[in-house]
Amino acid sequence: MGFEEFGRVSYTSQTRVDRFVDRLHQGKVSGSQCKKCGSVYFPPRADCCGCLSSDMEWFDVMETGKLVSYSTLSYAPTGFEKDLPYTIALVRFDARVQVFGRLSKTIKPEEIAVGMDLLVSPVELPDGKIAYEFRRP
Ligand SMILES: [Zn+2]
Picture: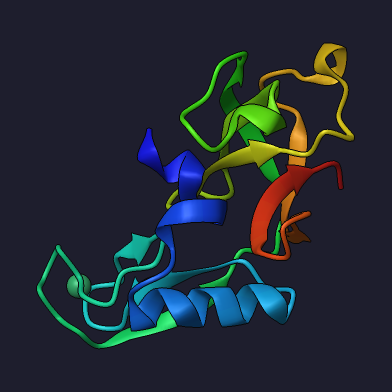
């Protein structure tokens, strides 16, 4: 479940991920697609693990997705305690794109339901970093 740490800890080193962050700052949540075989990746990859091509292009996750599953956490890894409680979720945007991330705290716990419509959008964090979260359309 390391990807939930994405917004704060783990997306610091690689050039391709820096471009992902650049795109967040432009208001876009993006994955990558292999130009050769069409495989889709979120989080984005620079190389296709299907056909080993490095000929990848970005796409933006713009449409409304559906909540597939979620879990509200009442404890967290070191460094995330101040965020508690928060809800992590898996949202399907189309047949190929599923995005894992956090639900906006503007969505009340009693409103969360599998199948609900959600958008994904960048969000500035209090510490000045940027991540993305799911919110109501
Ligand atoms: Zn490929």
